Amino acid sequence: MTEKLSEETRHTVLQPLFATGWQMVEGRDAIEKEFVFDNFVDAFGWMTRAAIYAEKWNHHPEWFNVYKTVKVRLTTHDAGGLSALDAKLARKMDGLVGANAN
Image (cartoon, rainbow, N blue to C red; front, side, top):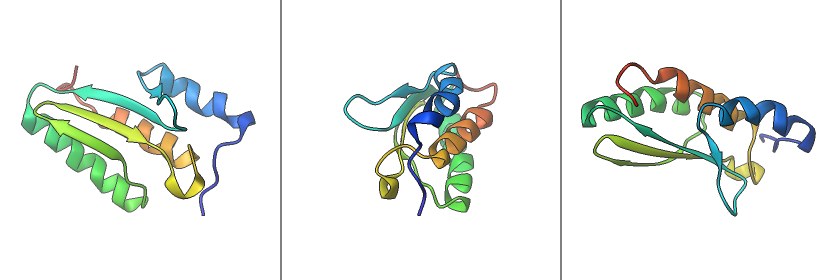
């Protein structure tokens, strides 16, 4: 089972993500970000690339796609909040964004 981030590590792990546009979700121990791409194909392609890592790491996002916008929410359900897996997947998602996102 994955462990929830401790109070001691939260700032260190989450602060770099906040600098790239991730935000805490009000009322939940979760982070979220909205990605906007040039078009639907770019958005869907990014989701497909992200899904490969999510499956590999057995850590799946809550996400919602409309046309060129993808809203992502990350939390570790079995840990009851944010874990190192959420930060790892958020960093990977940021890294997978190419020139086709705003």
